[in-house]
Image 1 (cartoon, rainbow, N blue to C red):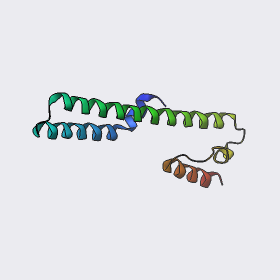
Image 2: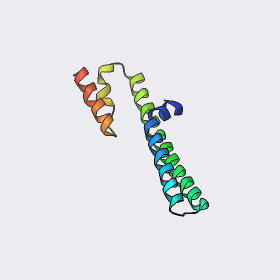
Image 3: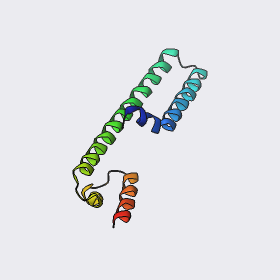
Length: 104
């Protein structure tokens, strides 16, 4: 998975965060907050969001690499769900259940 495809997948999350940041900035501006404070809040928001996305991408990419390695090294592909390990998210849990149904 490339970072570009990851960001495409998180498109609505990014739009929501940008919209919330803009609305917060407008609210703070109209309540008399200075430009410097608004910019500081926006920069902090962007840094926190960037850090969250970077960590999420790193974890997802690591998990996908592990799963690809397992799939490439298996002789009997139907054993993949057994070798995959414990699912790390609710979505992965659902994929795990589906793959067990297909193979079992």
